[in-house]
Length: 101
Image (tube, rainbow, N blue to C red; front, top):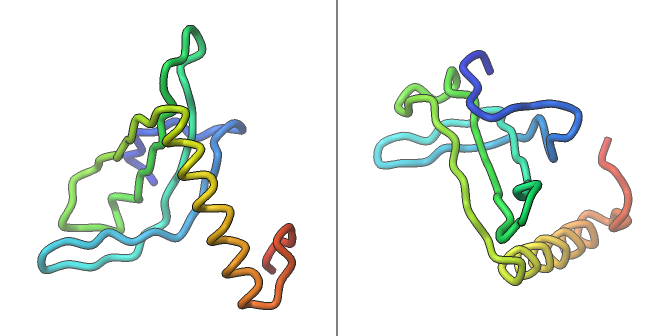
């Protein structure tokens, strides 16, 4: 990702994910970055950031999407991710804590 907007370092939550951008008249797969963070001082929200490699998505200019979540919203999202991951892992006959190869 040559024109990256999000910082990617050792603290980035997920520095390489398979993503997809969909819009009217296009559907493009692209590698991406997902990060969860909060302000260091006096945090009042959780920020979820997503950026796809703009070189793989011609119809879109370089951009990053961000959501500001309250602690309750972040917990709801985390619970939904956890329960969905458990369901998918069970369907794939994997352990919930196991990594894919």
